[in-house]
Length: 414
Ligand SMILES: Cc1cc2nc3c(=O)[nH]c(=O)nc-3n(C[C@H](O)[C@H](O)[C@H](O)COP(=O)(O)O)c2cc1C
Image 1 (cartoon, helix red, strand yellow):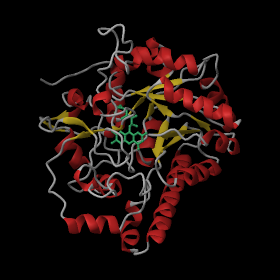
Image 2 (image 1 turned 180 degrees about the vertical axis):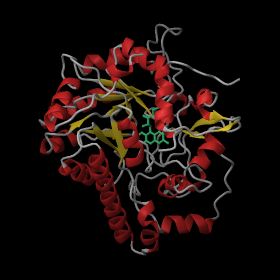
Image 3 (image 1 turned 60 degrees about the vertical axis):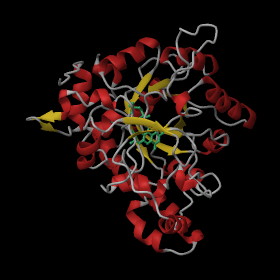
């Protein structure tokens, strides 16, 4: 794999930055889209990881969802009024994402910077407004939902492109039609995420659907499956002609990047490979203890409060929540995805879901019992030589991880 052809070249001025963006988004495909990291929340693909990705020639993606929660957690949780907690929570997210954007821009004024926001977040619209108004972000990735009003909202930020996350042609069509109907800006690219491999929330109906067992063509039961990368590119190209398609989910080795380009994708994005680095927000001790240990399996579950299947490392079994604990958690809700939508907030919701505002940021703080999202190729990747040093588990730097990816060597340890 020729690394330079899929990396951001060194850009030394605003003009070079604009010219390069024009080329990678051009419908004549004059230049390949650079490799990038996927947005990973809460606060996992933060400014530290993004700067490391940019230093390696990638396009960096910050995650804005609930990003400020940990920094002001005690103050937020001490507040008795729901309205006030929501206000503090949303202000914390706004302050933190703008801080991270500034921090990246100080180090890389002309790098390619994007931000990912989960659409179900209650503060989605206002985060778009803050990120757009900063004038510093090149690309926005709305994820885990289809924001039909975004096409119109994006008209206010002509410098910022947007690429919705989709897992099939129907979602892409909905976003194209929403732009058409509203007279707003159509998407500039699509982020095509394969649910059978990706980490976090998955764009599938349920766990069974996310396993990709359904044939793409019911007349050919032995043929390709619904979410196969080669099937999706043809179907999505029909509704989104010319614009870049970025493939994500299961990209872990140089040969995966080459295959994606051979299939006709313009770019690739990696989540898990970059989560397993010293620079990611996931603390090293949790990476070593759960992610690198083959006793902990990867599973897809339906427990996400957003009502989507998700892919996680199964850590140790958690104690059952008592009624008092559930009541306490609910009484300190920050309405991160809205109480009506939240599966945990419903009566009896604790039986099959969890409070994402409590359990996702807990992993970032290094606590036991947090949710550990991962892509499912983790089980293979664990065996890479990259993760062992002197016979002990080792968390590589992003630089080491990317030279491993591009060196083309699998380097499996048996
Ligand atoms: C820990 C973790 C957190 C994630 N959080 C988000 C998120 O907040 N928003 C999002 O769109 N995708 C999220 N993802 C998905 C990644 O951005 C990426 O698209 C996906 O993991 C790609 O698959 P891979 O991990 O096999 O490379 C997350 C993935 C992981 C592993």
